[in-house]
Length: 475
Image (tube, rainbow, N blue to C red; front, side):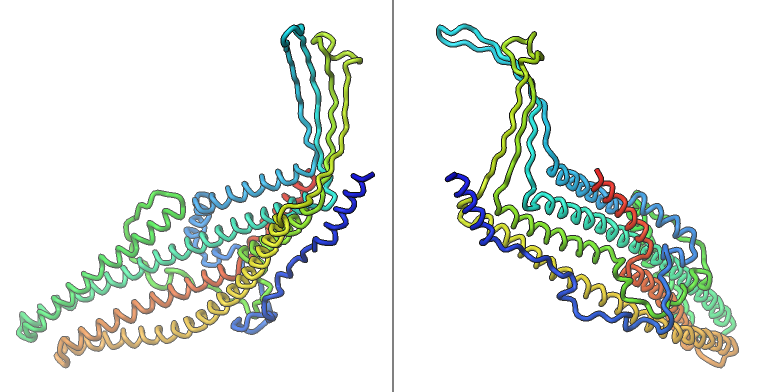
């Protein structure tokens, strides 16, 4: 009776002393969110393409992305980490079931004047912890949320690597186009040099004009190696992303600007802010917060008494031949209660530590959401400004080409000196390179926009996660 009274008293004291932590509201620290992105084009709502990289209409790019998804080492590492989290979930779920073992013993002993004795036994012991306070279920739930976080992190890595690969591919195409423009510039300067030579031979041009023409041609040729270096660097990054040896490839043939890559479709109007719910880093942060809340709840439950049931069924006999006889049967069933009385505040401190960790993750979740909105709004602003710049540069290219043609024509007729030709040629080259730059910037920004919005293409994986976890729970 005294033991029962003391146990009950300790239990009452613990119940009064232990305050159960409240789970965090993930959006508690997030400011009010508008229903649509402020910088999104106005109009009716539309969905983001799925998969987004196919909107560029490049079969070569589509094949590259599939190769990267299949062979990238960062993606493989993230998948392995997700597998680890899955096995940790299996371990946490197994703790909620009885542990059953097979034990076989054989003993032969003697001492002093005692005769030699033998003893044989075989039994099936089982141990089961009664999850009276939900500690094991909370730990299992925390492992489940950690698995979701790991799987979302895998998607975040996948999304980031795919975006990086598409960006590197666009950069490689841009460098190839710069190389084409620069080579055309070399050809133009070569034609100008031939013209100056003919005029010099006829006494219509000075030696200074000939020197300027040669210098301009040498300067144009000097640009080629640096552009080739940038092209090779982009190709090598692509190879590494695809899990291949970083070998470059020869510069592509001379592509025209128009078919280099079609302009992507305009951003759908009225993009809803709910699109960010598909971002894997946001979903991973939310899952980590949920796991931390459950860990805090488990630490709270650990401050209560634990109840264990132990049972054993088997046979024991001094003779091996009669081990399985009916008279050799034996069984036992025990129940034990372990109540913490004094631990110098260790369990309470552990609970408070878990609560503080959950509070930290709540702040990190809020920061992740705000960062995501900042990235999207910034990408939308950049897209609008890049589109404006692209129109202005198209006009600049047209005017520069007309000026170049006019300067060459006037020089051929002796109405202008060669310095005007050089200035016009340089202006046209700069305008063409700016055209390549703004086209590449627009495509790169589209990649960034898809990355920061998350992809609708993750919804299938989300459904796979639900089915996977349901099977885990059923098992």
